[in-house]
Length: 148
Image 1 (cartoon, rainbow, N blue to C red):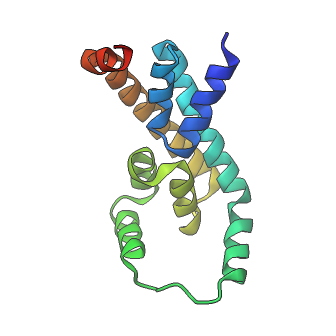
Image 2 (image 1 turned 90 degrees about the vertical axis):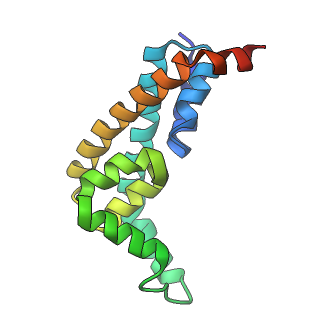
C-alpha cells in the first residue's frame, strides 16, 4: 500500500475535487484506489465542514463589520439552484462548481439536516469520482502528454 499517495489524493480532492483523480493518475494509483481516495477526501471535508460549519458561520457573522449584500450575484445563483433542485442539486454540483468546502457551507446555509447532506454528497461524490477517474485514465493522449 502507498499511504502517502493515498493521502495526497485525499488531500487534493478535499480542496478541489477534480484534483483527486489527476493526482491519483499522476502518482500511478489504480483506478479503484483513485476513486476511493477521491471520494474519501471529499467526504472528509464535507463532514468536517458540517461539523464545524455552524460555529464558523456564527464567528464570521460576529466579526463581519459590514453586512453582506442581500441580493448579490452569488447569493442569487445559490438561491436559484436551491429553489430548482434543493440539496440534490447542490450535491451534484459540488464536485463540479462549488468544491467540497463551498458545497458543504452552501448546504449548511440552507439549514439542510446533516444526515441528508451526507447522504446526497456521498452519492454525488461516488458518481463524479468514477466519471472523472475513468475519464482521466482512459484518455490516452493525456497519458502520453504527461509521460513523455
